[in-house]
Length: 113
Image (tube, rainbow, N blue to C red; front, side):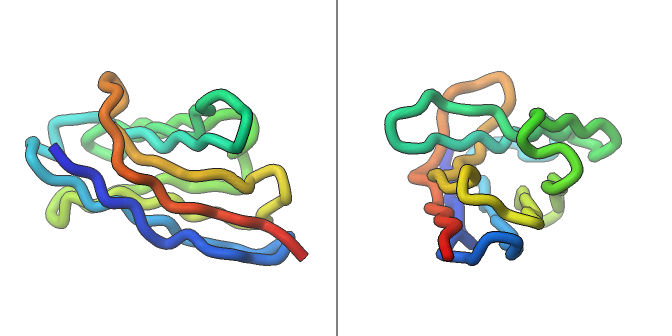
């Protein structure tokens, strides 16, 4: 099982980024997927989850109204559209199956002026 996150970078406050996650080694469409993040010195934080059919999406308080999770089962890809980014969104972002702990190397998001 492998996850490869990409799309991170440095962005100014108020900017946007779209993160991608390529998944392999399992039947992607059968699993609910999740984005989590971890900032230095802080615990892992749940951001958003989506079920296999994309008809059930849930967001953590920090993501509501600003982030949007989506997936493309044909490509085995998970996405996170992040708008109106704030300094406190700076972290390493990871994708994972909702019910399991394995995740990839993550992609760094830095929000700074």
